Amino acid sequence: MKLSRQHFEFIADDIAPLLEKPTSIEVIADKLEDTNPNFNRETFTQRALKNWEAVNIPAEHIATLDGLIEQIKDTPRQGLAASIMQKKAEAAQ
Image (tube, rainbow, N blue to C red):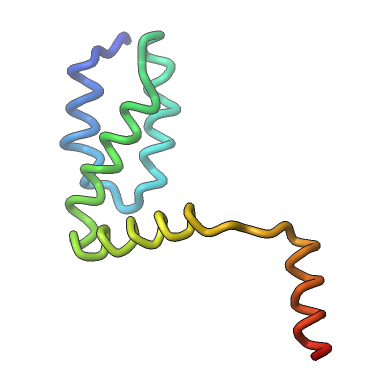
């Protein structure tokens, strides 16, 4: 069976929000990849997740999570070894 973009959009817009958990979107995307060589997994999963979040997560929680993600992206990270050495140095003081 060859599904079209209209089918993918319907699934992302109307079916994905009904799923119990968002990880199921990836499972569906795995199946849809076999139905059409032009299937754009990234576009589908982003659209489906956006619709799932709109129905299943309160908007204020999404805004808070988006803010936390931006903070983490902007925070420089040390490697594991450097982090351990810093903690040992702090403990020794």
